[in-house]
Image (cartoon, rainbow, N blue to C red; front, side):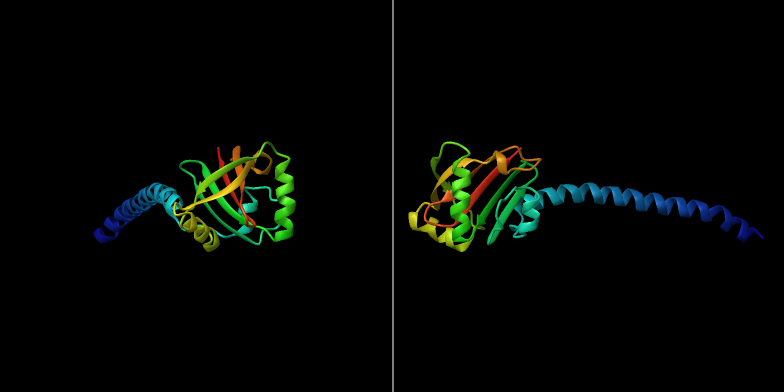
Length: 163
């Protein structure tokens, strides 16, 4: 009778200790996971999912190719978007109405499409030249400011956004 009474007393204590240990481990993992996910996102490989990008950016035409990186810690996103030649021309005309054009040299990131990386290497400085316009009309929350640059002599656009 004594062993069953002892078991009856210890079972709830063991159960409580196990549940407490699981929940504290889960919360620690969750906290560390959030930090790890944020730092991983900042340094992660670029994404190429056009549908996910479309949730953040109002694109008037379906892109042929996208590559983008989001940095949640800095609340920034950079996207490289390539349209068909026809749609690139139409898109250029649309963004041309958004404001005064500014000729800019933009640094080329290693994760950009190979064509842009090669074009940047031709300059010897890993930059590409393009014409930039305000991009506020393209943005969805949480992004509120940005610019879009059409890279000269290509159908690529570089979109830089922030909150």
